[in-house]
Image (cartoon, rainbow, N blue to C red; front, side):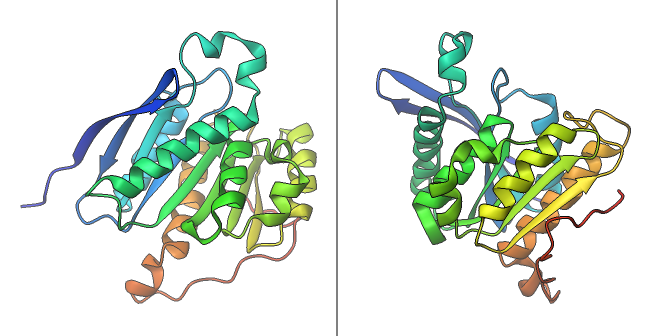
Length: 237
């Protein structure tokens, strides 16, 4: 009989505020992914939860957190404070290092919108402690060139082909990355990937990226695929 999913509410002090999240671990996880939501969103985001569910089906644990309090999320300036979002994300990552069930697991970061910028800044600061980063419809450009230049973790940027303005911003960020990287453009998808089958495409891309860079591909006898070199690579999904 298969072991049940482990679910744990996580409460993290953050100065005068606190970060709340939900940790869910499948049996025998190969790693854990920390989600950084975008402005105006939360750990209850249906899109992030759909991706998280697919990752757990692939034996990857997930921690979805609220990086801002409800009051902070009402303020435009706070919602776009990348430094604050990064600080809160770091606190969540540090908690994963202390929890008995996750402290030995590789950590990945999944960011959407402004959360992608926070994920990349954290990856730049933590170096090899971050196994991989995935951005969905993100604003990686908001991480800033100094941080993007320092990212060592393999990074996958996913953008919808209909999200033309964000494609350009992702191409700018992609050029500044010096790590293993890939830019995937999902044809027929808009900014939120609400079109039929497009969020499933995101989940498949993210799961494959995390599994390979968390070492699961090698451990299961599957050779890792080399990262794509061209930023203009496009695939239909």
